[in-house]
Every structure is written in C-alpha cells, then in structure tokens.
Image (cartoon, rainbow, N blue to C red; front, side):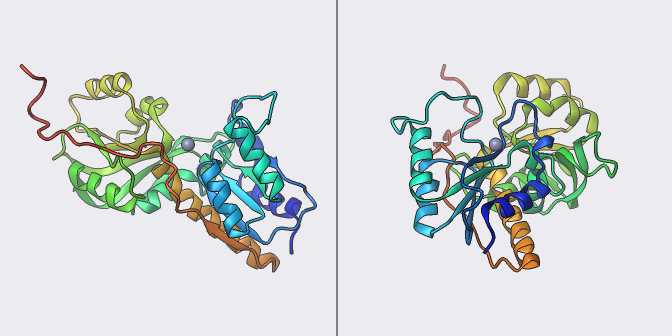
Length: 286
Ligand SMILES: [Zn+2]
C-alpha cells in the first residue's frame, strides 16, 4: 500500500504545482505524508457533503479541483464550514489534495475532459502555455465537430452529455447557425473572450457568463454566427474527475498499488432549480 507522499508525488507529476496561476492555491491541504492510502475519491468541490461521502466510502485521500482556501486564513475553527471540513478530514484520517489551474492547463486537462464529454475532437489549446514546446498544454481547447450541428442541436448535445444540473445550457446567438468548430473552457470562461474571437470558432462553451461581457462579445461579432453556450460551472469541470481517476488508476496499476479510485457523482452545483419563462418571445410586460 503506497504512502500519501508517494501518491501525491504521482499527482504532482500529472499536475505540477508550479504550472498553477500565481493567485491559485493548489497542493496538499490536509494529510500526513506517512499515512497509507488505499482508497481515493475525486470531486470538484471540497464541501462537507463530499467529505461525508469520503468517510462513508472509507477513502484515505480526497482530491478536488477547487481549493478549500483560495486566500489565506487565520483560523480553522469548526464554527465555520471550511474549518469544519478540516476538522472532519483530520478526525477521519482523510487527506485533501487540490489540483486547480495546474489541472486546467495540463495535457490532458480539464478542458480535454470537457471536450471528450461533448464528443469533440481537440485541435489545440485556446491559450497555449508558452512553456510547452509541443503546444498541447494551456487554457481551454479549440475543437472540431465530426459532423456540423446547429447551435440548438449542439446545446442539446451538451445538455444531455454533461451531468444534469438545474441550469442546463443557456445560449446567446442565433440558434440555427451552423457549428463546425468550438472553443471550450471548463469553469468561468469570460476572461477568454479575446482569445475566442481571435480563434475564429463558431461557438464557445464555458460557464459563469455574465450580462455585460456576453452582451459586448455578441455585439462585437454581430456579423458572424459566433454563439455562446453557458453551462453550470460544476458540470463543465466534473468530466475532469473521471479523466483524473482513470489517470490515477493507470499509475496505480503500473506501481502495483492496488488503489481503489472513485469519482463522486454528488451534484455540488449551488443552483438547485430552474423555472423557464413560459414564452421567451413575449418580452417585458406592457
Ligand atoms: Zn472551477
């Protein structure tokens, strides 16, 4: 049975901490390097519900995409939900390790998993990492569809292939436009609009799009059919958990570790319900 330090070293090879953004907080949050690891759980969010699942499962290591503490803290008192997570983890001998923007930029990374879930062929990164001579690492991915779809059909595919959430998929742009090429970026993607525009794709699928950036983006490309597809943040990153679990499984086989690797199916998207307007053409009341 491997020690935590050995498993973490393998995870660091997949997602080196130095490739994370400077503002990010990645790496091991809780855990004794000498503790043995037999069962691992992957999830997007390090929240109490997921920690409870790890306990029930008998996991020794929880690997999440989102950091528990992105900024510094002066307390891990259990009176706050993050402190309670720390207490619960330590009391149950469960380590917590985070791979965030270092997993976004990896090859394969978060957006490769998203593209895979949507049955897209990855062509290249949307924002290539200048440190990668092979041009495969970086933020987001530019992808091609094997057969063109309308924006409406592509949105329906995304809604059915990504994990189900209350939000589903929101679309900005002309629903009957043809989609042959797509930029995808797991998580919040509205900082990437300039790169998407430069890539010349037909659509951009990401999460957390806001009124002003989306309105300005679609106005700026009014002459082209470029569409925006906004999915739930959690749903765009969840496919990475399955990819990462497969990667760790392969490492475990190679080392003869016999790890049991699981992926949480718990929906930790904060939005729980969605009421569609009965008639979207009706507009504001008179
Ligand atoms: Zn995220």
